Image 1 (cartoon, one colour):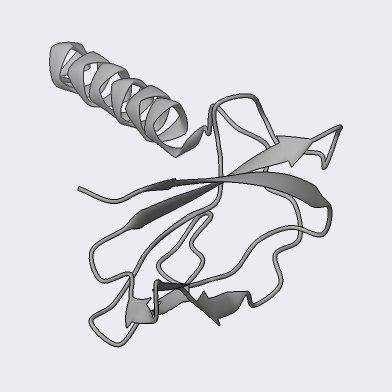
Image 2 (cartoon, rainbow, N blue to C red):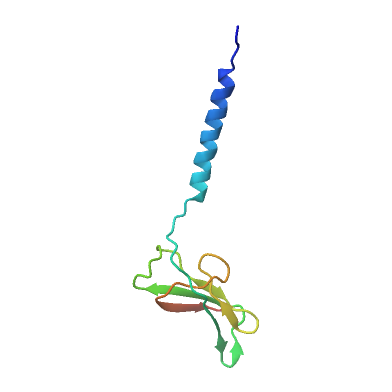
Length: 104
């Protein structure tokens, strides 16, 4: 007589399916990634570095990015900044941008 454990096989299959669904849900992005190019600069206000300022780049027209995803930078102590879009200091897409600066 052969004894099988169908309950365990079913549980393993269900667990595997759930793990695949969770992985797929976590890896999906709610934005479109476009090619990025290094972008950096220096912010000087009244002859002084704009240390601590936040710079946001608002696309003018379609640069291929999803709404709500905007390149940005924070100004370093010497006034320099590197633009971030997806990963730290990765740059910005090609295109025209309006720039806003918030300096707390």
